[in-house]
Image (cartoon, rainbow, N blue to C red; front, top):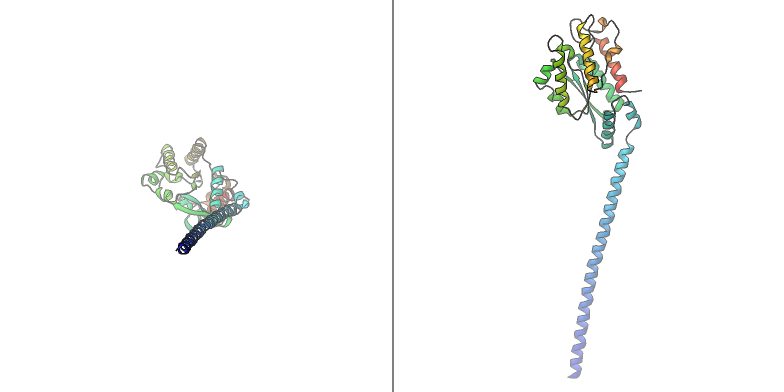
Length: 263
């Protein structure tokens, strides 16, 4: 009887010890698994962080200094925006805005668009033309400027319909319309330029001088392409119209090309 009792006790101890061993093994396996998973997650996180850093460094290295140098004539804010856009892999949007003097597919604006895309790269700049047969007041009152706003340009070259306004919209109203356009584009860098010269005109050149003074007073870059035109521009414009002819578009384009694409 005593031997039977002893055997039962020994068997119970063995069962208890075996169960304890199995439980310990199971728990230590779970903990080890959790530790392994944590280590894997940490390694994965470290790897992801390293990849992010590599990607950032890669993007920073992708900024070609020669491209930034091409924009050395631009306002400082525009140069900064251009570099940031390149670093982020985004296109830098440029709007060329004005009257029919832009010249459509064969004018200075189309030539400048092509030159910008070739100089900076089509993946770097997104250039769009906005051409209107309007006065500056019609451009604002009829909300034609919303086309430009929807494009969300970073840089705008604006010919503010000064020749179209001649004899219709006075200078003060023209300037007020420019104000309205600028207010609609608070995040863009805007540059002003006059329309083409008018041979044998006395009042129009004074209006152009008023535009330049307006630009100076508001600290807006003013691109005076008239410097590139001959003193007698009769052979460079379409008679009776506010548009340049082929030679006129070329001299206008050459001036702007030198500004926008520094050599």
